[in-house]
Image 1: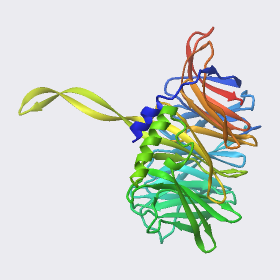
Image 2: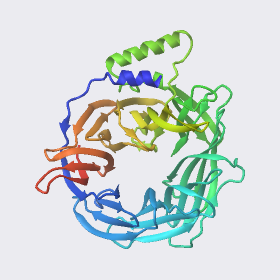
Image 3: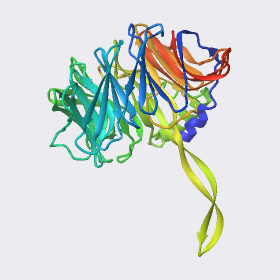
Image 4: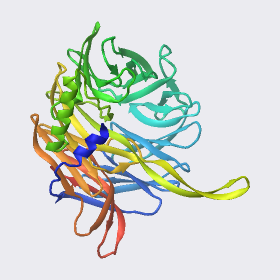
Length: 482
């Protein structure tokens, strides 16, 4: 099914590429073996850029005009790897995998030039840190253990030990769907059991190290498998939004569900298949949409539903004046076939043979969608756009979302292209546009990304440029205005 949709998408018309008109811009020389991570911290604070090498990292603060203000060096344990970062107040907290069996490294960086603090925690066992959320002095780290996933709690500026935050009444083997900072303080957590059939998710809140179970989200006998969940607090109750699967054991997303929880538990649940959402397949060409609709209609005529089974990355819910905005990205693994000639020994004799192998090539983001959901659980509007054929080694959000009083902007950087779409009052006011991230001196751009930055977007990536200094490789930061 996904192969069919991709073939239909490739037939979509390509808009003329224009050059991106950027405002402020900065360049950093690239040396072999270095990595760079920009952290947009909203105006007027500017950007913090982390540049790492073998055992020393350089932290540079830029102002809103992308002029460097100050810099400092940071010594890191050998092979330490940045895995996540989170802003709390006027500080950024960087989480590193220190590559020790029990070590969790957290670095505190002020958003404006100042003292950088480093704290090495003891995870209490073999752990692999994956995510960090900080609330005041409480440092929450989601980590993997040899048998499950856990949430660790430490104290910023306090002792070196971390303890596990958990619920003894929940199953031992849990999967973590989401850990986010709560607007009311503390963190909100969604976990699920290890079952594929009739999965149960638990909504929980942790504050000052105390974990409170809020809701249990599970399907009833006549409902589909609910495979993900997140929520927002509203005056009328708790609005839970997630994806459901078509089959009882499937984990591929067939559509969205919205449920309302009040003082007495669940009040209602509504489901909408992706095949019934106008605008979800607008990333396809007109001909592709017509072919898809004919296929879906044949299924309906036979009393069945066309199954799609997406693997989705769903962003954190975004509060909107007219409800809640959900943004998702459809992904799929891509494999390539390699033919290798090798020499082996068989019964004491050397033989040469040719072997064909299926090798994982990366993750492809096929398309992204945005849908606005009302407090009553109705899908007000849905729009999507195709994301191209670029492959990524890891799974992460690639679409930057900007929300203002006039509407919603979706942006996605892919190689030397910046792809964007603008939605206002439920209508597309700017169709999918592709702009070149180049000028006459830029020969090539790659490893690009974008993030909301105040009323603008921060764009970054690697470039090969030419000029009076000759050809060279640089890491660039650029401000993109609407």
